[in-house]
Image 1: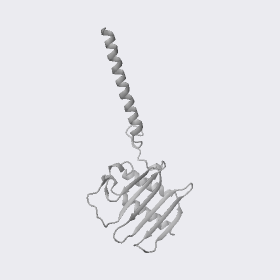
Image 2: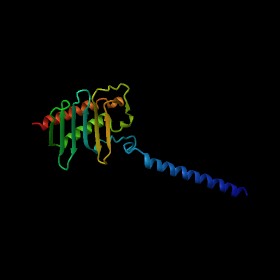
Image 3: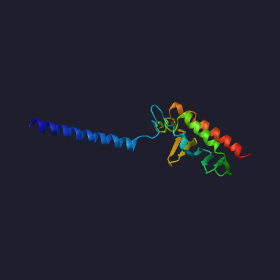
Image 4: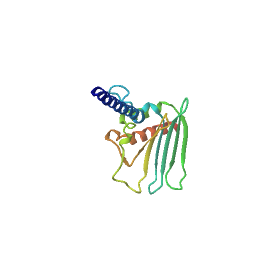
Length: 179
């Protein structure tokens, strides 16, 4: 009598443990962030997965817009630039094939700022100017995932130089493409 009661309790406890273990395994399988824990104490900043970088700034009272884009091609990278100084003005465009070396610079920026692993930490800023232009940087990864940073969001202090570095690098690429 006592033995069968003990066996029943043991079986019930083992079934509950198996269900909890299955739940934990499914949680990590479905919701684990792949950029965390490559190995013991390591973090993969995901910068090696970047295949496209886009910067856009537009809006504001004058209606000016600035667009930069660089995307990987099989052997080179395609660089695109558009600038419109104000509503109704003539748009300046540049489209050139450039070296893939520039992606190494973008990857280094992402590695230094740890932006791709801190994107979820961004919160809308408290001070929003209604007539100010809004800028975004979008990193597209090999998987097709698009990670977008907004100039009116607040990110961790580690990401503070992201917009300046990306704009500066795009300026260098533009200068090289216009030669």
